Amino acid sequence: MFVFATVTICIAMAVVLIRLFVGPTLYDRVLALNTFGTCTVLFIGVVGFLFERPDFLDIALLYALINFVGTIAVLKFFRYRRLGDSREEREMIMETPQTKQTAGDLR
Amino acid sequence: MSGIYKPLIIGLGVVSVVLCIWIVHKLRILEAQPVFGSIEPFSLIAYLFWLTKEIGKADWAVTKVILSPDIPDDQRLIAVPTRQKTDFGRMIFANSITITPGTITVETEEDRFIVHALNKAAADQESLGDMNDRVAATEWKARAGGEL
Amino acid sequence: MQSFVVDILSWACMLSGGFFLLVGALGTIRLPDFWSRLHAVSIIDSAGAGLILLGLMLQAGLTLIMVKLVIIVIFLMITGPTASHAVANAAFVSGSRPRNMVEDVTEETSVSPEAKA
Image (cartoon, rainbow over all chains, first blue to last red; front, side, top):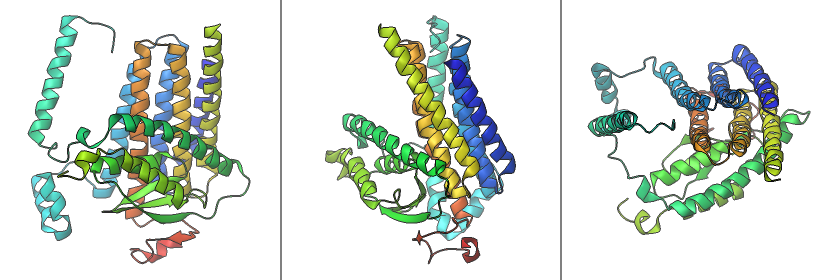
């Protein structure tokens, strides 16, 4: 049973990888990356059961978290071309009127 | 989590929890609406069971679309008005729309969501309105109308 | 007897979960544009992951492992839709629109008209 699930997840991961390489736009690639991460979480869990070492589930949990944060970080980087916000950038944001409310909430 | 209950491990866990709470308090990101006061837990659990059933039905519908030989060509963007009063309720509604295959919440505005639907069956305003009412029913009535 | 029934249920969950995983992966290849691929990914996130983890839960029984599996399911169910909403919103803001749209509420406010073609 676990062997069947492992093989299925591997096929799904390979197919998603094709989309990751082919994907015409950036968003296709980010989406495929996120899906690949989800498949990896499943894969780690199932392999932990296959080898009867359920401690692997801790790694799967951690991978789920890091996958989500990584997806959001990539999207944010390509939208704003930076990852954090320094002081002068925040002041630059506050000068534009429509984002004043948002920047005010951040303080 | 690891099944080890030595005092050292437990102590390290307590220290990291306290550190996290201190950092979050210092960042002041908890001054928005209170989350757990805005929803009724038991009706939320009942809603989750209903949502699981809906996800099953929608899964099967999208599976038929993917396996059918003709490529779907009638995508649409529709506007869905929201009837929730709290931010947490709106978050649950948006996530419910997105996790149901066939519909994706694209943009959130003040009183409506812009939803992308795969085909005509997925863009059914009545089932979306049904989900909308059910999420609004799980909100805590006594407080939702008040200062929240 | 009871473990036999649990095994059968677990098999059923694994088989259907694998089926939905394959369908979702096929959808990411077959569907024509980005906006319809979002729905194929949504199948993997909800049905595939949920059913396979449910099958693992049935195998684990009421132990600490099951608690971990429940936590993983909760995390995947929260972060999966949020991530796909973030991707969709980023594409929407950047001006991308689905092709061959039947109905569009944002037509009058669209930023880049040529992206709708």
